[in-house]
Image 1 (cartoon, rainbow, N blue to C red):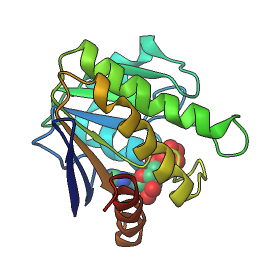
Image 2: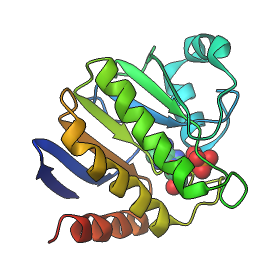
Image 3: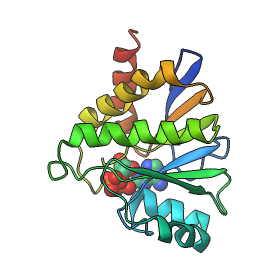
Length: 179
Ligand code: ADP
């Protein structure tokens, strides 16, 4: 686990499961355009939330790459789920700008809803094929850029599924925070 405190915001990278973060007010879904169950992160979140989540999502779909929408969390232990559609790497272009929009829009929605803590998965790095290290640079770079603008958000967690992935994120976090 790596933790930093910058601009009064705690930023941490942890290994774990996105649907097992009960202390976070919002979790982010690496959604598909139709906001349906799917696999990976979306599958885990929808299974844990129950069918009410898909029902709430239905009128909000489809969304485009880079966009984010917010719903309740249903049976999850959180208050909100923020659904982001990441870019399919190399197909939805420019992939880096679209991935950055996901993080920016999710943080903006958090501010608009008075959310204090938010957990992100590594959006687009699974089925959507975004290479991990460039994705980590976009994710943490965008979060760092947003820090001075945040007032309600005071805790940001990135949840990585694999131990190899967390090492990459930790290295980028160290680099960006000058340690
Ligand atoms: P995308 O379609 O945006 O690529 P995926 O859900 O396929 O989204 O994967 C995004 C990342 O989340 C991948 O790095 C994958 O290993 C990881 N992941 C998969 N399941 C979980 C989970 N339950 N919790 C956290 N991360 C997960």
